[in-house]
Image 1 (cartoon, rainbow over the protein chains, first blue to last red):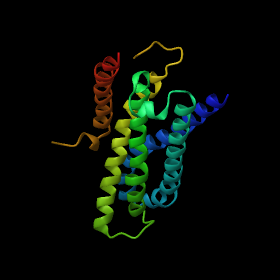
Image 2: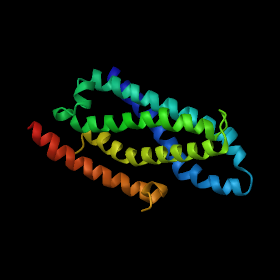
Image 3: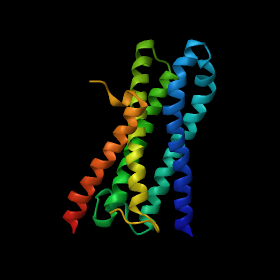
Length: 164
Length: 35
């Protein structure tokens, strides 16, 4: 039961995280230039983006923690996964990609988005640079999520044909 | 050369290409080496 609940939490948090990541990339980033053009961007930057970013970064953390706990308790082993040992290799690749993504969220996206949204002081040049770094980190995570999900679902494919 | 991550389509294609590369890597260089 413990493992099912852990996996459930991992997937719930993961959907929240990646769902918001896709929202940022496929919706907000596309709508923002248009919103700036007709002076309605403030609604997004003041009210929507900070809240979405809060759910985004904490969902990322919960996803990683639940995943790490699951790997350890399910007998796969966190070390075996990260060292790509034997049958733990496919899920290990997923774990590596998820870990890189978590790093991007907390170290690259969030600190730079704080400057972009005006939550911390920054001049225009610093804001422009921060926007570019946050954008590329977010797009990198979108790219990584495609591979990460493949290895997550095929690495422990219950009842599905084996890929590895 | 334009950065593929600047477009949504480029990002998605990059994700599929990366998946294929990692798949080949795991099958041929990790799992075969361990077998």
